[in-house]
Amino acid sequence: MKSTKTWLVAALAAAALVAGSSSLRAQESTNTPPPAMKGGHHDPAKQLNLTDDQKPKFHEIMKSSQDKLKALREDTSLTSEEKKAKAKAIREETNTQLKALLTAEQYTKWQELSKKQRGNRPPGGGPVGPPPADKPQN
Image (cartoon, rainbow, N blue to C red; front, side, top):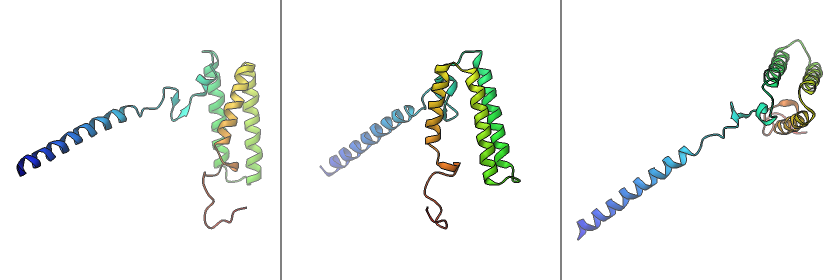
């Protein structure tokens, strides 16, 4: 009788392990990012419904803007205020170029996407989260 109980407990434990591992594998296969994701970010070209003619021009404008902002961040000869002013000028130039490229509807959508993106970042472009312990809060 004692060995029957032992076998029954062992069989139930084995069945539970098999069932648990199957459900875990099924869960893992559903954890794939949606197809609209590109490099971890939403693809604005798809969201804006760009034409085949607009796509390379859009990507060129965005790449140029990113390159200019990266160079600006790496420039140690400028003060913080000078960097902010130049960054604003780069963004304005980018918006002017995009407004010329996109339809009115696409540009409005672009502004909405940009506003959402800016809303996800803290003011001043610093890291997300509480300030360091050595710096007092304002």
